[in-house]
Image (cartoon, rainbow, N blue to C red; front, side, top):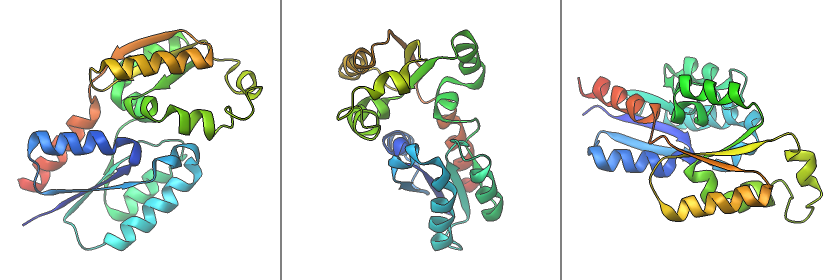
Length: 199
């Protein structure tokens, strides 16, 4: 039986698992790297390469559930090495919103801080603590002084997440806009890979 490996960012673990379960994709295995790499994009390609080297030869098809994510082509180089494809776009905000919608948002207000379901859930750890804003609140203006708003790209309708996004925006002192995106390109990309493995 042919097997598909989806290896991606830990920030997508919930979405990847939900799509696999909802579609009963039994030919798919999922592995995720530490979502904290969000804050260290220069290490993503190295970690991907190491993980895929350990799996080499065990799968018929590999899909990388990362966009470029600030790696300056690093994910593409790993994808080429292992004959894999990756998610389209520069980052998760683009593939959740879709490229046309994201570029309209970015052009309308370049000073936008984006949230996803994952970033809302882990705002305290990834933003407040990792950026030292909890212990050094004076850094907020240095880091976020040029931002003008927060846009929450919501994958699932969830009032608790909406409320948490509002709290996050308030902590940054920025107005909040919420856009329901669903899974965006992620669902389409995974469906395409499953079709390839089962054809």
